[in-house]
Length: 139
Image (cartoon, rainbow, N blue to C red; front, side, top):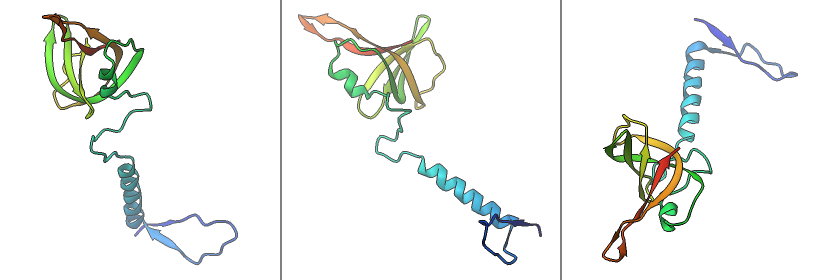
């Protein structure tokens, strides 16, 4: 049976303290699993933002005609619509839904994605009322 010696701080005396390789392996696996699970997000939304610069979709829809700079959104793909030379994906982040127009193809429904783009507003006037909506155009 192979044995591994542990490092001991200087000045301490230790008598024949060894851990076999199987025990060391299990300790490292447990340490790795605990570290991995602690980084997870177990919130109801189920998403951990990639950074502080991820904008909730609800915030984008609150003021649809306001011009915003480039934003990041994160969510799951709910629907896909093919366009001429482009693709549109409906993204849901738990706070709302928004359409993203992009050149990317092949993104499957249910997949978690992050998009960077500019918020656009398309006005659709019918009977004197505005039925427009916001969407994200990927850069």
